Length: 162
Image (tube, rainbow, N blue to C red; front, top):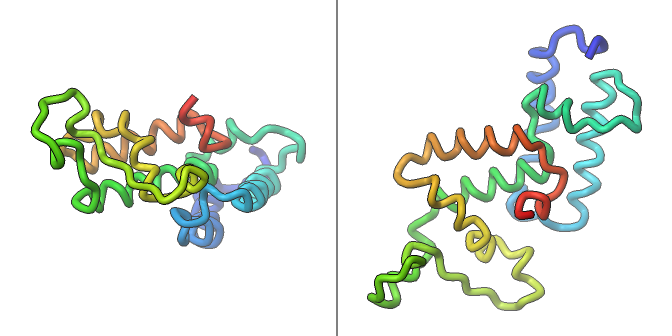
């Protein structure tokens, strides 16, 4: 990282010009095939600024700079949306009184099986394992999720659920 004179300056410029554009509306487009092109551009920007070889993996660079790759930013933004709108999701215990272990899990209503992987409203089902961490503290949950995503620096959304 000799190419960067000051990491803080780079991060300020990155967050002002690149991150703000990437984050805009990411919960709507983040899981579609074209998001790969944006992720490629994000990697190119980080590689150019860091001054490393173009074919070098920049996964460790994302971790070092504490910048979330596009797939991780998508998951983080989606989880924030779900957390902030929990009252709009119905849980199993709201439709029956059976004391089951999944009574706090969210119900899923999707129009099509093909859309289920792309549908925002259906994605909350995939994040059931995060809700056990959530409890009542949204701030700690967001920080823990961001730390987890940054530590692993996933290159695809599918990688997160393996």
